[in-house]
Amino acid sequence: MMNKITEKLQMDHYIQEALREDISSEDVTTNSVMKEAVTGEVELICKQDGIIAGLHVFRRVFELLDEDTKAEFFCKDGDSVKSGELLGKVKGDIRVLLSGERVALNYLQRMSGIATYTRSVADLLAGSKTKLLDTRKTTPNMRIFEKYAVRAGGGYNHRYNLSDGVLLKDNHIGAAGSVTKAVQMAKEYAPFVRKIEVEVENLDMVKEAVEAGADIIMLDNMSTEEMQEAIRIIDGKAETECSGNVTKENISRLTALGVDYISSGALTHSAPILDISMKNLHAV
Image 1 (cartoon, one colour):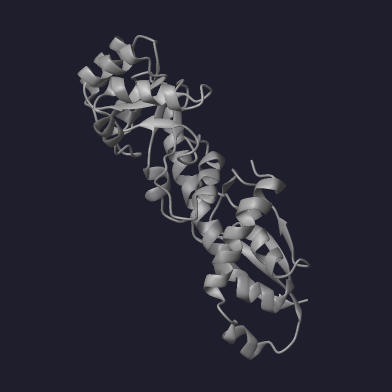
Image 2 (cartoon, one colour):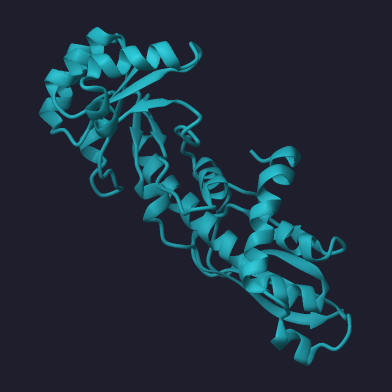
C-alpha cells in the first residue's frame, strides 16, 4: 500500500515541510533540558479502539530527523487496535524523539482516525457489490496520507487529483452549455484511456448522460426514488455512483440500490482523530 518510490518523491517532501513548520529554528524546550545526545526509548500507546494507519509515516518523521532512529511496531496498518494496547517502541537520540513527537503523532492520529471511520462505513456495505470511495475533499498537502488511510480502512480511492480523470460536475456542464456538449468536448480533448464521469442531479440529466455515452454516471443528492428510476434508465449502459452528504448515519438508504460505487467526502473531512500517545520516555 506504500512503496519507497512514492515515499521519496512525495511523502518525504510533505513530512519535511511539517517538520519545518514545527521547528522553524530550533526546539528550544528540548535543547534546554538535553544538552547532548542521549539514547532513549519511548512507547507508542493506543488510547482508543480503532484501526491503525500511518505507522510508516510515523517512523519516517524520526528517520528524517536522524536516520539512526529505530522504530519497532507490534501491529501493521489496517489492524484493529484496542485502548491501552502497546503499538510499538521508538529508540534513538532523546532530542529527536522529543522534537519529532508531535508531528509524528499528528500524522498517525489523523490517518488512523480516517481509517477507523472508513472501516465503520465500509462494514455497512459488507456483502454487497458496492465499493466505498473517497473524494478530493482532503486537507491541503495531506491528500496522499488521507487517501492512503482510506485504503487502510477498507475503502477505495476515487481520482487522486484533477489530472487523474474526467469528472464533469454541475459547473463544468454549465460552462459547456449542456451534458451532451460537455461529454462531447471531453471525448475530443481527454486521452481515450480516460473514463468520462458525469454528475447528474435529475432524471433528464441522467437520460442525456446515457445518450451522450458517459462511462460513469454519478447520482448527486437525489432522492431514493429518483435514484431507483435513474438506475433503471441507465440499465447497465454506464457504471453508477451515488454521492451527496453520505455519512455513516445515512448510508443505509443507499445500500440496497445496487450501485457500483458510493462516494463520501466525510471519510476524510469529518473523521475524528484516533487518540494515540508516546509515553514512558527513558534513557537506555
